[in-house]
Length: 201
Image (cartoon, rainbow, N blue to C red; front, top):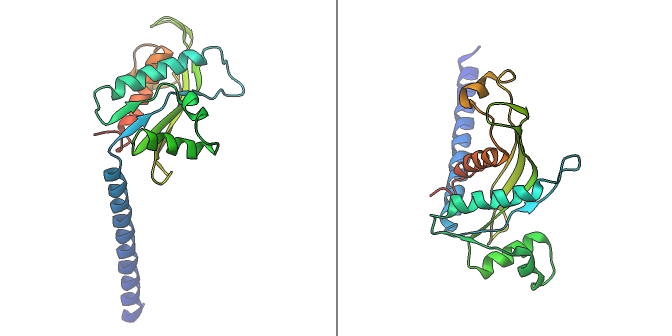
């Protein structure tokens, strides 16, 4: 290979590296601006969105459990407010798509972002702490909507059915007992919220 070709390849590699660094810096600065713009969060009541092929009978219990978990997570955070009756409030607002309604509610309560969560599965374990017939199973998702732009600043999903020690050796190291559905939900929600920089201050 000639020295000219070698120099050309080195130049191309350096140029690509600079472009990647530039893009990374731009994204970081953009995220920082969003982070600085979200100083207050309105937490909406959890909504039930049942899976098509699942037991819906326990879902309302799951809604209440998730609301309790959210209150517990945000109770000592001064930047968070809770809305107890979202449906009744939106009845008095002009009709529109759900995103517009969420933004309007956020503006009404002078919040920079709105956290909305839904739960689609909540199945309690059958049995006791160390001996069960079937494990707890939970599925939910959350979005943090920036009021000004309507974009999702943060979103996540959690879908887990606790596995037996014989099925998952890693799980055996982490858990030595069978969790209730509420314990599994609390664990998942805590982990997911803590990974979102806009709600972790």
